[in-house]
Length: 314
Image 1 (spheres, helix red, strand yellow):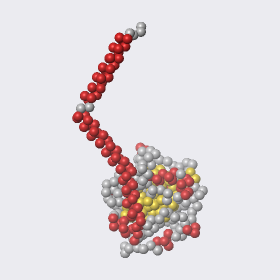
Image 2: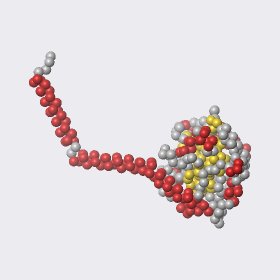
Image 3: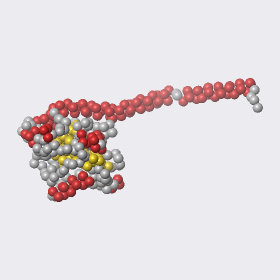
Image 4: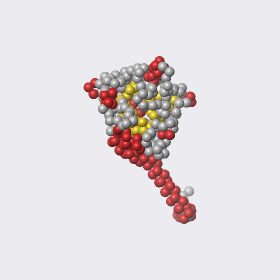
């Protein structure tokens, strides 16, 4: 049955009254106290957002600027290719200016800031260009920066069991660094998942306070630290009873590698491991393994490296 004009007028009147009632109800809810609470909530929200933006982007950027000033004094160089087909690390170190304690003079400025500094690490075409510190444990620099201030990014640090002294018997140097999602610290080690990137950047420069040196990568592998996420592998082993145990350890690093390379490792070599979180699975670690370039070693051709077909995974 069709509605009369009077029924339409009553319907419209009811809608208008309901709209006014809802408007008054809303106004009653937004009393002065509610407005103050809303205002404070907005301020807190914006403040929290601003803080997170600063911690995620601003703070790392400022840290990079500060480190750049120390790098200028340290005069770090990008990892080089072998000049004339031969690396001459030994000859380069003989030319370095040294202090009375035998340390490189180029480290003097940054070590005045922090005596825990034991080296500097640099990898071409990445953001990895940092001083390396070391203290009596493997926890302090997880959350402290080069200034020893609390900092979520921490600072790359050498395993406390290692020694950078020239007469050290350390065979496996381990440097730990966070995998920050903003790309800083050791996050860009993931670039080595690309074989082409490895072919173009196979060398790590890790200078200690005593000697400059280059290290050529021979493995990129994954490891886990708990049984809950796979089979643990003790890649942070630092003591080896003999050459056979050391070479067996190296073989384990190669079997796990995501890339197959022509880089050999001998019993008298020293190796360097860079360790960071993987994020592929809980408690996994991404580790890059390299060996020290031998004095007067001919340039190593890694152009035929390829993606491993069946690497041993956790």
